[in-house]
Length: 140
Image 1 (cartoon, rainbow, N blue to C red):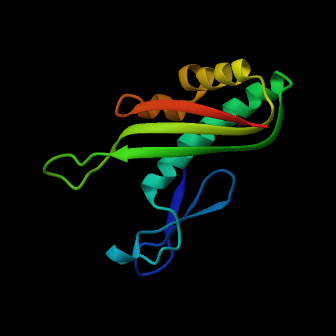
Image 2: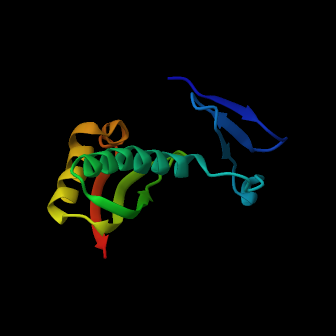
Image 3: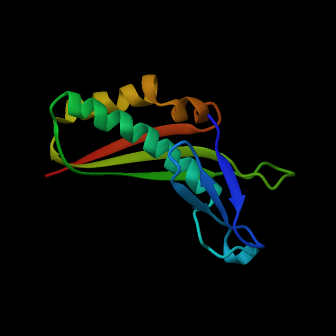
């Protein structure tokens, strides 16, 4: 896998491109000289985790003939600064799945568990450095 980042201005605005050729904007906050024109790198880590798990969960539910009318996942990450550095990695991450439709709670629980334990590579990448938990809500 290969991605390319290109600097777009004289500050911290970058565009990233992977195999899909879709541009992703990355920037820093205005307080450090950015222009707020994109997501922060650590936000993209959480989005990557949520996207990886979501693809799994939706695919599994579709195979089980569950009806998904609307879907979203809210990912909260708690960071902790490593003493003597500027680094503040995630130490706790929670994915809260919110699904609207005719979805069997047991099938949803199983889909999430399969994603977290067997399929999601982003979970595998992050679980040694952060406690990853999940919760869900079925709406309607």
